[in-house]
Image: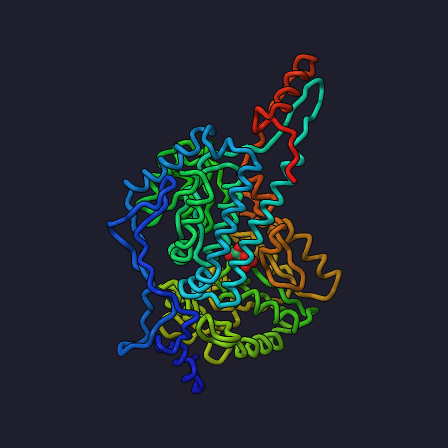
Length: 542
Ligand code: G3H
């Protein structure tokens, strides 16, 4: 629904010479990848990387070329796997047998080197995925905080394990030990943060890592390859670039991957798991589909609800797994709510990621604008309207948010995870209707309830805590704080992540046990006193 005021929208993309120098990045043509502690030269096939930021040309806006990365094939992928398997060496390698204190020191060196690359990584995030300057900065800083918090959590865990326990005449020391080779794959929307929330805990627990870079946000990792190389023993972290179907399939089929850490769709995750010849040997930590609902009742503070629904549905253009992707509003307040919502959307500034106060930016996925348009057309053909001026306006990679109303269960937008700037609003009479939606949904990550009535909120909390994994009251859905558990039911997740939970997810308890006899007590005391074992130790990490 483009209106007469749209000319402004055609000025989103600027000639390259009008982009401030401080935000530009030179083209990066990466011709190396990390294998067995070396940056190995690559002269084969490459994949070009384009920005969601377009440059105006005679033929309309064209995505800016940012550079290129290796497109390694199955042969090289298997060499990467072999290096990882060798570094783990059935748990006998340098990294898995290193003391916790030693691993922490390596990780501290990595964070130190990572921070040196802060500025270039933030700029690359803006160019590669179109994330605003504020959010790209937050993504980098939050990731550094996450690593530091992980180090602290491991120290606590180690302190708790630095003692013997005695029960029924048996004395034991119980610690968490690594699982083996971890294949880490993550999404484009948080190419640094989400990947590191699995890769870093997996690494610090003594596992070795096969790191498959995301499609968008791949160059943002290039400045970190040297940090991985310098900070960890060779083969501990190895990188994979290329088509998942060509390189990940043989890796999974080898049966040598012990943990699949994957953030993406449940369809792809299920396909990957099935490739492993011994499924019982594969642990999976997955963060998958979600279509989190907001429920705005007639007792809601509508200003709070609108504010949070805007944040929830349009932060990073709605490209968050935790985004609010369907808004239920009670009919009594539907008109007032949608009016406030459309006014709030109209106030959102579109533009390029580094521009001041910008909220809506171009989308990295080439097929996303046509898909969103298809969803809107489907809803329109079944009786819905786009309520806001310019809603659904599209030019090249830019797509202005659309508030679609009234949405019902016959429409794609009711069921599919749009992962983009479209806000479907569903009117309802009884609170049983949004509960019914969640009961029938294939996913179960989070819900946001908006109401000021304690009894009504209670009536919604009780069913929803058993349908999703986090019930948010009068606020948007979100992952943070990172010390809180992040998980989901049904097709939304497998395993739980938080700073502390991730350390558990990527390890297994192992214990050394002996009967309490004088000779065993002497034996264990001598081992501990002489520091002969990295596992059996009562050292306290300060
Ligand atoms: O895409 C999913 C992210 O983990 C969401 O994190 O809620 O902090 O934006 P966030």
